[in-house]
Length: 182
Ligand code: MN
Image 1 (spheres, rainbow, N blue to C red):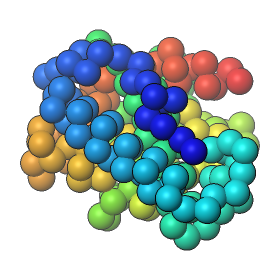
Image 2 (image 1 turned 180 degrees about the vertical axis):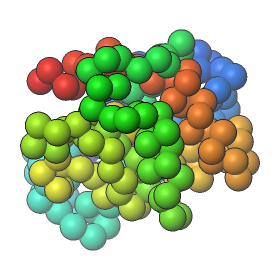
Image 3 (image 1 turned 180 degrees about the horizontal axis):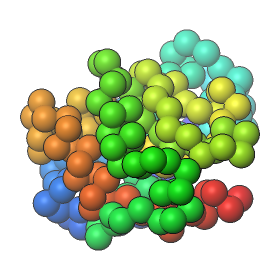
């Protein structure tokens, strides 16, 4: 059994204002992440850890387990006064922000944009629905949730503005660089 208490938010709920409101965080963490946890607890998942369940499951169990993992990882990559692009990341791209934004905009419907280590190459990818890079042999470094629930309260249909706010103000680069070193 999993519980929301196992995955505390690494920041105060109002600390990402005005780029991500306390109201959005409340719904996203309590209702969406909480919902995936409740759903998974109601299913017969096999595995000692969340990572094992994500690795070895499919169907409803995979969808809910991967959504828990993706959300915990997403929240861990956010901070107030993020922004800038560290040289380790900037040097891997022509224009990191433009390329990440184009990828995040290209997700049709619900999904995620990711910065990953793909066999030693730092790359930007997208996944649909609950899909997650570890299922494709890639190591996640950062993710942006582009499901509509991630931004609708603050930005309505303006996904581009949400992506800009994330890229300019909300990325926890210490988290990304620590992931890169591991
Ligand atoms: Mn979400």
